[in-house]
Amino acid sequence: MLRLEFHTGIEDPLAYCCRLLRKAYRQRLKVLVCGESEQLNRLDTLLWTFEQLEFVPHARLRGAERPDAALLPHTPIWLADATAVWPEPDVVVNLGAQPLAEPGRFARVVELVGADTDARQAGRSRWRHYAGLGLAPQQVSAAPAPDEAAAP
Image (cartoon, rainbow, N blue to C red; front, side):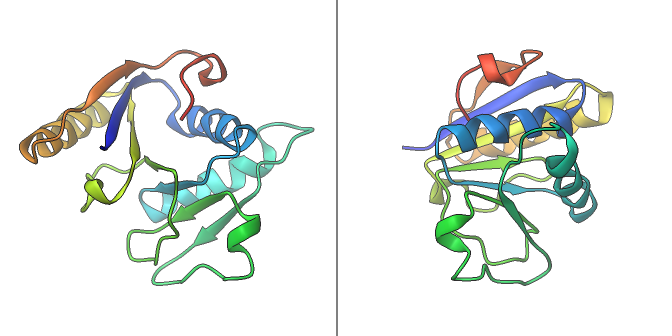
């Protein structure tokens, strides 16, 4: 059964996502992050720099790229464009404005919704889309530090 969460009211979605991914990595979860290409590129850079003494292992899939089979067992986090071939994750984190095309393929989906007006509107639209598919999204108010929040 799909677990669908909306983390809402996030002031800085990319910084929040970095902390969420760090926590997921510590819990040994396989995570796929999707969204707009530019957004994923910024997240890729942030994951190298957001914590001075930590590294969150990840790889970037652009366009229609396929994951490198040699990297799959060693890479817990993938940042993937919608057109890329996605590895099988434990959790999908959506940073984008569009809903996932096939959310039922995954055990857990986390939708990140920023605090600004456009992000809230896009989040509401995704919520309605998923509800229209017969899914039951659950709202999680974003805590300042997801390290203390529920695991991704």
